[in-house]
Length: 244
Image (tube, rainbow, N blue to C red; front, side):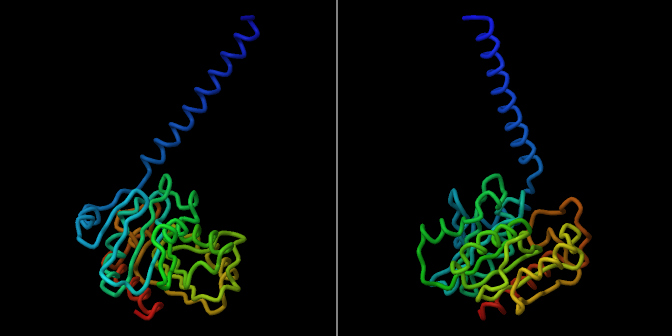
C-alpha cells in the first residue's frame, strides 16, 4: 500500500471516529437533559387501564367514545403526561401518548398515522401536544388537515409557515400565565396561522412544566397554583371542547 493510500485510509478512520464521537456526545447530552417523570407519574403505569408498548402509552376504559393522540414536549419522557391524561378515560377518552425518537416530537411529527394504522377506529380523533409536541402536531396537520377532528395546543403554537387558518375543525390553545418557556411574542404572531374562531385559554398562576409531571423546568416561571389544579383545569377545557 502506498503512503498516499495509507494516509487516505487513516483520514477515513479519523473521520468515522469523529462522527461516532459527535453522535455519541449528542446522544449523551440529550439523555442528560431529558426530563424524567415524577414518581407519582411512573407509579400510574401499574394502573389496569394503562398499557405501555414500544411506541406509546395507551390509556383507555371500556367502550371509549373519543380518541386523543398526544405529542409530549421536547426532551420530556412521555410517562410524565399520564397524570394529566389518565383521568380523561373516565370521561370516555382513549388516549395515546406517543414515545418520540430521542423524546423530540419534531423527529416523528406524523406519529398519529402509526396509531391509526395499528389500531383503526371510527371514533372522533383529536391531536394535542405540549410545547414542541404542539408545534410538531401543527407541522403534520398543515399537510394532512383531514386526519383529525380537532387540535389542542398546550403551551404551544404553530410552527412558522404552518398555516392552519383554513382548517374546518376546532382549535384550542391552552397557556399558563407564569410560563416563561413559551415565547409570548411568537405566540401572538402565530395567531394569524390559526382559524379566527380558535379558542384561547390562559390558566392563571400556572407555568410551562405543570402541564406535565416532571418537576421544575429550567427557565420556567414559578407557579402560584398547584400542578393538580393546573391539570384539572386543562382537562376541563378538553372536555368542554369535545363535549364530554
